[in-house]
Amino acid sequence: MAVPVAPEAPTQQKSGARAAISERTLRTDRWWQPPLISFTVLSAFVIYATWAAFVNGDYYYKPYISPFYSPCLAHVCGAKTIHGASGVPHLSLFGPWWAISPALIILIFPLGFRMTCYYYRRTYYRSFWLSPPACAVAEPHKSYSGETRFPLILQNVHRYFFYAGLVFNSILTYDAVLAFRNHDGQWGHVGVGTAVLVVNAALLWMYSLSCHSCRHIIGGRLKHFSKHPVRFRMWGYVSKLNQKHMQLAWASLIFVALADLYVRLVASGTLHGGWV
Ligand code: FES
Image (tube, rainbow, N blue to C red; front, side):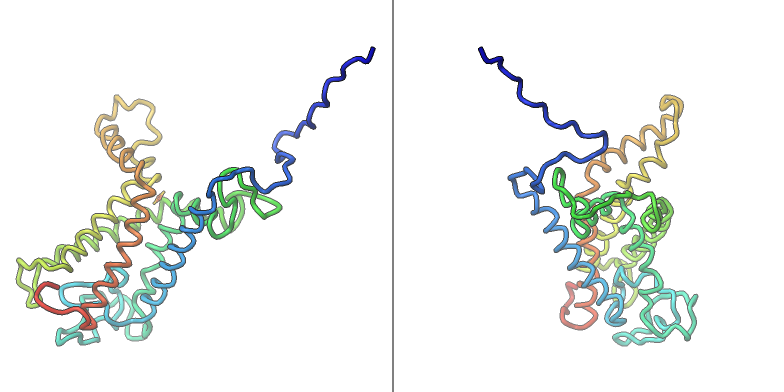
């Protein structure tokens, strides 16, 4: 009588090794959609922002200034006469020798803040480097070193870009307040541009305050929340915002480009009228 033989046990994987599956993934859903959408939107933003930063024109129409060009730190900002108004409000930290776009002086800060953001890192690692493109989908790269080596170890500077971002948010909030003045400098003006700059500043604040570093700065390293009731309460607020970090990241990114576009359309004369 034949003795039944137990089926051979599958080969055990060493700890840390990938499962021996020949398919790239066993997922049957549309896992490729989110990285494709992210790739498309981020690419469109990068192309638009690069053009807007280099074009060096139509970034101011009193009292509106494009968020890509504020603060204006070059002498060249004040040297221009725009629509009969004398120059863009500016600080001449960079003298007449700075002849190219003043946006290039400041964009490293908001750019660095976004590039090192935990959420954006996940997004562009997936959508641009396919590392991995989605959960449970094998990546095409042979090795993986995470963010432990140069240059990705530099992502750790995110906290410092967060502090710089707060300075920029304050300046853009100031710009939004100035947008309540009319072309002649009198207070009480409310145009579409006013609303655009106010919403832009609000979204940037919410994006910054929902930052993971912000949450840690406010509530991290505490052994007893009960001994720090104010920080605990603030930590609760930013934790709620933190749950919406992804949505705020996209909303603030898209809106900052729209705010630049709006100012550009007004400054170039494409949009005009009392309502602007
Ligand atoms: S984690 Fe996204 S801005 Fe800090």
